[in-house]
Length: 334
Image (cartoon, rainbow, N blue to C red):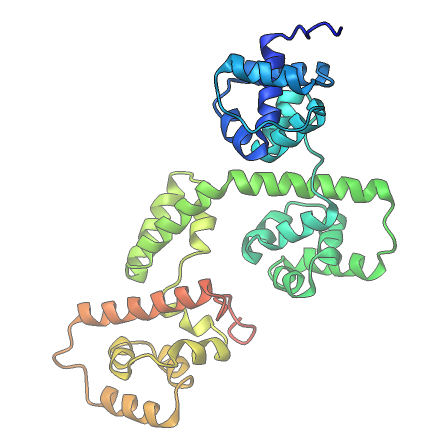
């Protein structure tokens, strides 16, 4: 006659969880403490099989109603399945004493890198070795690489393009070094998201000021020795900077803007700025605005002019954030 199995409390609990099945057991596992889960895992690995009668006895002992599974249970494998589908990979690895999950593949790293804003990525790469930048440019999607390339400093850009043109097959060790460096860049960028959000908040406030006020605030910020000046400056745009936009960007910006708002914004503006705006308008709108401007600036409040200019500059920033225009100076303007 077979001797009854002598099970520990942990083994009994493991047997019942396995018999319950994954959905129910998974919900219960979340209420166990970490040391209790470790004990369950160890018990499940030592528990090979349980006859049906013994399992029913264990179930009655706990005084719960469970759906009883097969007479023989592969406890260790079933417990692994329950854990895997109920807990996160990090939690399972910690409980089982496994090493950390392997880093993302090289292809995944490139995809993550492409999600960084082109202007921000160009700033990061300015501090990297030309060969590292060349490898990154070569492996990015052409559209993403082109946006970053044009933002690099001219000296670095030439060196990078030359290395891209002569680059052959990289040794595995070199690829791994580049991949490690990119992973570091991604971690640093993730850690800097809060700072980036702060820059955006400051820029959104400053974009509501007149150019003179913006310049004054930025000069005061620079005097404090802040490292955020350049990051904030890159997010600023004023009405006076419309002359630096490409013709295509100006056309996209003024397409649909109210004629009276454009007219008001151009009151008292320099001739080159007026011409830059008018050249982006259709013939009919241009004639209407020129006629209004020729009538003089009587009864026009400076506050209203400043407000109209800020609204147009704000619209330009919004279009740039949506990827519809570029706020970088055009070659013609440069």
